[in-house]
Image (tube, rainbow, N blue to C red; front, top):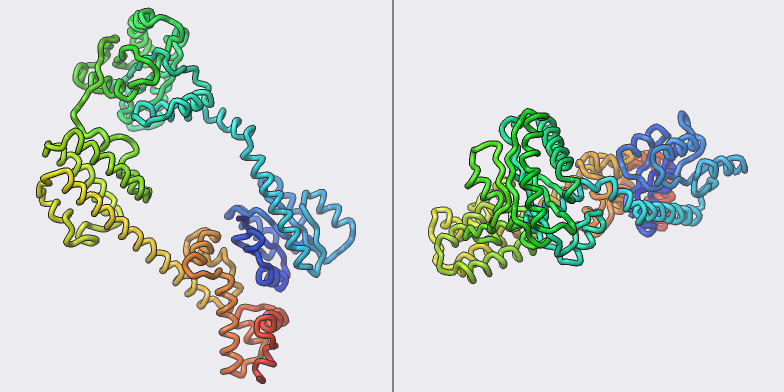
Length: 535
C-alpha cells in the first residue's frame, strides 16, 4: 500500500480529489492534504509519503520548486503535477523536475487514477531496486562486523543452525571457517582496572584488547569474536591446515604475551582461559559454558591468570536445559508469540518427563522459571494473577504448594498460559474499541472543520495508515466512509428539522465550497438539497 499527499491552495479541488477518487482500489491507504508547499514539506518530514500530487502555481513555494526540494532528499517519492495552464512550457518544466505525469485542470478523474497507478508503479520499481541483490550486498558489507558478532553470539548461546544454513551464513559473512575444521575458544576477562560506569570508555578498552589479541594471534590464526552476557570477550580461533599440536603450542607461547601487552599499553590486566580443540561447530555452546564455569571455579577473584588448553569437559549442571535455551519463554511471551511459547513449554515437559520425572527439585526449578516469566509479564501490564484467575491453581501455587508430578505442573503451566493469552487478547480488543470510539468522537466534535486523516491520527497519537487500518478492521468501513456517512446523516437532519440555508449547512458539515456539497449530496441521494427539503 502507498500514501498520497495532495498539495493545492484551492480547497474544493483537494476535497473533490479526496472524496471522489476510490483511493483504496488504487492501493492507497492514507491521503494527506496541504494548502501550500511549505505545509507539504512539513508533512513529508513527518510521514512516509510515496506520491505527491501538486499544483504548479501556489503562493510562497511553487509546485515545481516543491518537487525540486523533494528530489533532493526523497528520491523514492513520485510526483504528479496539476495545473490550470496547459502551456507546453509547464509540461517541459514538470518533466525536467522528474514528475511522472502532468494533468491539466479541471481534473479528469480517470486520467488522475491512471497517473496514480503509474506513480505507484514507479515507486514500487524503485523499492525493488533498493532491495536488489547489489544494494543488499552493499548493506551487508557495511554491517559485516556486527553481523559476524551476532552469529558468534548465537553459536555460544546454543542457537542451532542446520549445516546448510550455517555454511551459507559463513559464506555471506566472509568467514573462512569450514564445517569439520579444528577450532578452539579463547575467553578473555577484563579485570577491575577496566571497570568504569562510562560505557564509551569500557567499549574503547574492549576495542583495544581485541586489537591486541588480533595483532598477536592474527598471523597464526583466523579470529572471530563477540562479547557475551558477562562482558567477557570470546574468540573463536582456527589455524586452518595447521596441526592441532602446533596450535596448542603457539597459544601457550602467545597467551602470556597478550597479557604483557595489555599491562604495558593499557595499564590493566586480563585473565585468559583457552579450550581444548574441537571440530567446528560441534559443542561450541557446551565448550563456552565450560570455560565460564572453569573461570569461576578455578580462577575466581584471582587476576591476570592464564589457563592453557587441557581436557576441559562440558559442564553438566543437572539443570533442565530446555528452560534456559534461547529464545527464553519470557521473550516469547513479551512478543505475543503464543504458539512458540506452547512449543517451548512442550519441550520443557518432554525433558522433565524423560530425565527428571521423579525429581521434586527439578519440578520446582521448572515451576519457578515459568512462574517468574508469567508474573513478570503480568506485572509489566499492571495485572496480578488474582486479576485474571482468582481461583486458578497458580494462585495457590504462590503459597509454594508443591506439584507432585510433571503432569500436574504441565496442566498448571498450559492452563495459566491460556488465561494470560485470553487476557492479552481482551486487552487488545478493548484498546481497539477505545480507538474506534476516539476516532468517532473526534469526527463528531470537528465536523464543521476540514477533517484530515493526519490531524485525526495526531489526536490519537498513531500513524495515519495504522489508525485507518485498525478502524477498518474493527468496523468494516473506512474512516472516510464514516465521515461521509455522518455528514450526509447530519445534512438530512438539518434539512428536515431546521430552516438553515444550504450554504450554512454545508459550512456546518465542513464543506468550504457549497457547490461541491450540493454535488456530493445529489450523487448520494439522487436529489439536490433543495429538492430533498421540498420533498
